[in-house]
Image (tube, rainbow, N blue to C red):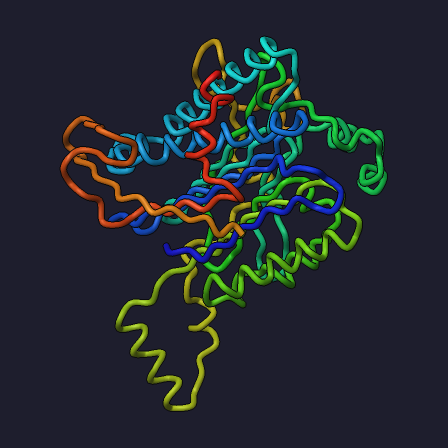
Amino acid sequence: MNFYQALFTDIGTHRKSNQDSIGLFKASTDRGEVLFALVCDGMGGYENGELASRMLIEAFEKWFKCEYPYSIYDQNFSHEELFRQWGKIIYDCNEKLVRYGTEHGISLGSTLTAVLLVEDEYFMAHVGDSRAYVITPDRVFRLTRDQSVVAEAVRRGEITPEQAKTDRRRNMLLECIGVTPDIHPLFYTGKYRGKDTFLLCSDGFWHNLADEELIRYLSGRQFSGDEDLSLHLQYLIELDKTRGEKDNLSAAAIVPYRERTESERMAMEKTVSSGTSDSKDIDRTGDTNPVNALPDDVQHVRIDPEEGGLVPSADKNDPAECRTADDTETVDLYVSPSAPARSEKAGDFGTKRIAGRFYMMLDEKEVREFADSSILSDI
């Protein structure tokens, strides 16, 4: 698979600071392009919320650059092991933020929604009320479950979805990284098909947008490059702001597609030059597997912090069970799949180069600059 991508974060119309952090990392490997995207919505006031959300981005950035390159070539590497690695990152960050908040007498935290796209599979981690969607030409599938007070009230039938939109408790979370020592991340995995759009977004983005608008502006089959996708995503952010959204708004849109082989390109050119068209063949381009992104088809698991293993979530509705950006950095990655890691500096390993480069896009400031700050070093 290859990917078109766009991401934006906006301070909004009422906030004095942007506490959201958003990251996108991409690598070319002999398994095709691999893409990793994250959206984190920080909370805790100016600087504190930004600290929490950026800390998560930096921690997962380090994993993607330093640990994952060895795993992708390991035949025994499973999604269970992937989720264990992600769980450890989440628990470690949660512990550091809780300790930092206690020591400084403040409360800070962040949501997390992250997706890794490899070949025709997706892997996802989720905490809080940021969201992940898959958008097809005629439907929108929400992949994540909000861990919030109003979402739980809707699930229990205490209020309607319409009432939830104006409920005073809509910003109250049941799960948040950095607030309490006890945390219950959710993990998902499944298949996807080309030309269907993945959308990751903070709650400021999804509050005022209808499914029909997401389909109209983000359905993947209308795009042939990053530029159009960026324009459509930016339009939705501006539309959301005109509807009175007061929160920060952040979103990442990813459209997987299968690059045509030389023979397919020649056949397409021949079709165009002859003035004929085979719509069935055109529609099939980019597809790999049918979407199985329906909520009931997604595997729900969580990590037991005491046991360290994965535990199936028996009841998906039980919270006790399932408790422009223009900044771009390119980093060369070196690795030897048969040798242990040898690191002299971040992003520079071993002896053999993987075919490709990593790309990182973030909002406003570089994570690396923030990581060198005294606040983060204190944690």
